Length: 112
Length: 110
Image (cartoon, chains in turn orange, cyan):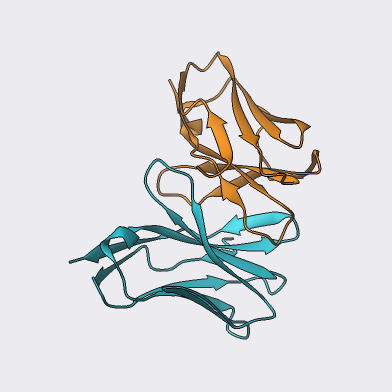
């Protein structure tokens, strides 16, 4: 139990679908992150939210849309994805920068 | 332009011996470094960290060394155990960004 919960754990979606990934943390952290891990690639930072404000958008395509309604919740809205977007999507949170980040279990996304 | 690099994709070590995982970085502005361990289909779990003002941090079987002049850090695991078999990522903070290396798969055999 890491304190960071991601749902769903697995998701299969068509290229025309709209879906959302959810991340929840009850650690009292102020920063939340979305990462993407593709096969044989490093963990790629997608978005950073600090105190509910987006501070980083790492050149992510607009078909990925994050939302942080409060400090405990982070969403990643998905629409018109491509098969190459299939990956493990990981959420993390940390108290501040320069402190250890805790990760959720990830959502395994398959785009068909 | 990978700013955090782990040049060894895999490492195999006998149980009881020392495992040394290496990491190089290119940006001297990184000021906090971390090691994570990851099992398949799970999120990374935090192992140990080190601030740029230190050159060594120890926690049980895990020790991280930082050589700022060489922009190099290493993770020592001693003694290695079969349960240590996993992928290990080094990571570094640059402002609010936590940037990860490519990972090294460690296998500890009996």
